[in-house]
Image: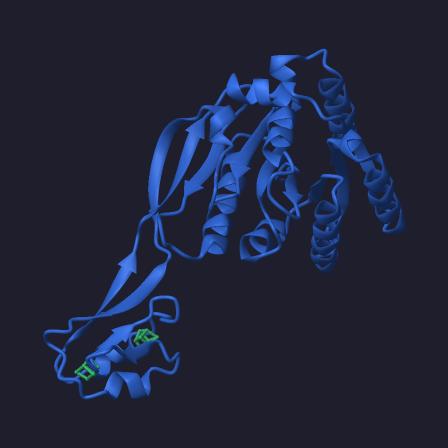
Length: 293
Ligand code: SF4
Ligand code: SF4
C-alpha cells in the first residue's frame, strides 16, 4: 500500500503577502518533504532554496499559426474559415494571425491553397528537478510571451508527487501562485490542505474572500495564517471575524518583522536566520498544527 503523502498548498489571493517567506519558513520545519514552486509565472522560491539543478526539461505550451506573407495570395480563405477569428487582414490586406486568439487547430494550414501557413509549437517553457538543503524542489520557468501556466503547474505537481512517492516523503509543500486564475485552479485541484496567507489590508481581505470561495468549490480543507497582523489591528479583527464565520482555523499570526527582509537578502528562511525570533516561534506552532491536522 502506498504511503499517505499530505500535500499542502500555500496560497494568497494576491501577490506580496509574504507567501514565499512562509513557504521557506515551513520548509525549514518540515522533515522529509518535497517542494514545488507553482508560481511558474514569477517563480522566486529559488532565491531562498538555492537549488542545484539536476534535470531540465522543455514544456510545450501549445501551437500557433504563422503566415508567410510573401507566399500568401490574399485569397482570404483562412480569414473566413478560422472559427476562432484569429486571422485578420493588415493595412495592406494581407492576413496576420493574432497569437492570443489562435488555438493552433491547424485548419488554416490544411486549407491554404498555396501552403503559406505553418504551425509552430512553442517550447520556451522549462521545468526543473533540483536538490536543495530542504529536499527536492520541482520548479519551472515560463518563457516570455508563453501561455498555459495552468498546464505547467499540473505538470510539475505530477512530478512532485512521483518524487514524493519514490522517496517515501511525508509531505509535498506547494508555493502557489497569487490570484484566483488558471494556475491557482491547477494548484488547488486535488491538493490535501490549502494554507491561505492573508495580509490585513482591505484588498488582502477582499482577495482572501475570493480565494476561499474558490477553495470551497473544490471541497478542500483550508487553514489561515495572518501575516504582518500588527500593521492594521482593526482589519486583522475583520479577517478573524471572516475566518470564524467560515470555520477556518487561524494557525498563526506573524508580526511585521524587518528580519524577513534581512533573511531574504541572506538567502535564508526566517527560521534559519533567527530561530529565536517571535515569527520563528509562531511558525513552529503553525507547523505543529498542520502536521497534527
Ligand atoms: S490554427 Fe486554427 S485557430 Fe489558429 S489561425 Fe489557424 S484556423 Fe485559426
Ligand atoms: S488561405 Fe493562404 S493564401 Fe489564402 S489568405 Fe490565407 S494565407 Fe493567404
